[in-house]
Picture (tube, rainbow, N blue to C red):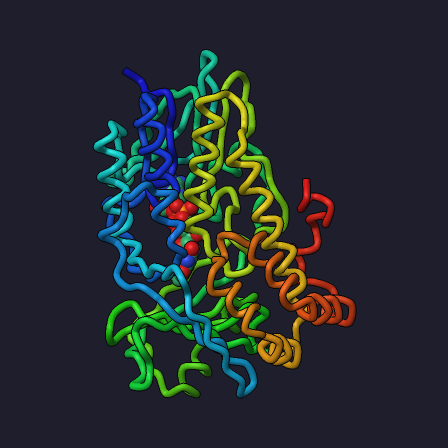
Length: 392
Ligand SMILES: Cc1cc2nc3c(=O)[nH]c(=O)nc-3n(C[C@H](O)[C@H](O)[C@H](O)COP(=O)(O)OP(=O)(O)OC[C@H]3O[C@@H](n4cnc5c(N)ncnc54)[C@H](O)[C@@H]3O)c2cc1C
């Protein structure tokens, strides 16, 4: 029997979507261009919200837990102790777990198939596919297509979505410095190098990843190498890719003839633009898209995700104008109650965190407002969301 839904992309978002749809009774075929489910290693940090969205799948992929964050700016340091530890996960293990869940729910995962283009035949969508080993052509006929094929989604392009803006993310695995505790992540704010931040995330008692998000690929790698040298850290291997920069909500569904095309994960741009984390938001988007496919219309999950991504965009627009002095001022302003808020609320609860912080330390708002008013225009791609849409 031909499947109801064809999913392109067998990574985090695609496999989870396949699992949810198959569990709900849809016949699903997932096409992945790689010939095995062994993507390159990638160390990821997520909040414990992961367990909630995945409903317990993926626990074996957790390789470490983070209980403290140390924030550094211009010689100052602040420590935040998390009430609910962050989770460090290894992507390869997560993918294997998700693939097993999808297959156990009944999804057919087909490797070595590259999606090439979309067509329409007899009221259904046709996926034109290339078999990777020999380059021969195949067709798959379905009612619904889900593009889970990453930041440069070919499905999105074929269905007429505009290309997304992306930024480079580069990290290097290193041996942990002697003075570093494996339950602590370090974050450095150095706006001359990056409007985001540097991090050092331990993934085991003696290793971790140091990285940053930049704006230009070559400069980002040079900044990382300078940073490693300054901190006397030797890179063991590099992990890098481009990540979408969320600037406004793009509807995740398009109608082609009488069929639907949806996007999930990085293909849909479901990435928190404050930290450029896309794992938890990608899974939340998958829940939302599955709800839309099953009910025939987008529901509250996608609306909630939209509000949150908009809030992250709002915070990021303020942070883009921060100088070193602004960050230092923020760290100085971390009162006991403000620190407490950062300890309780995670970056997957931005509304609660922001509201509490402003309540307990209103001067944060003043610093942010001053940076916003005195700073230059936001970088390209971040100016498009209207402030009004955050509350919509
Ligand atoms: C170095 C690095 C570190 C990161 N750290 C974090 C972190 O700490 N926390 C966090 O939350 N996020 C992090 N991210 C972001 C996170 O990894 C991504 O948001 C997430 O992996 C996106 O998953 P996805 O399934 O949407 O897309 P992808 O992982 O990009 O998967 C797309 C899949 O589609 C397949 N594909 C592509 N084109 C085709 C085609 N034409 N036909 C068939 N298959 C196709 C690809 O082979 C791939 O398997 C990091 C990213 C990088 C690069």
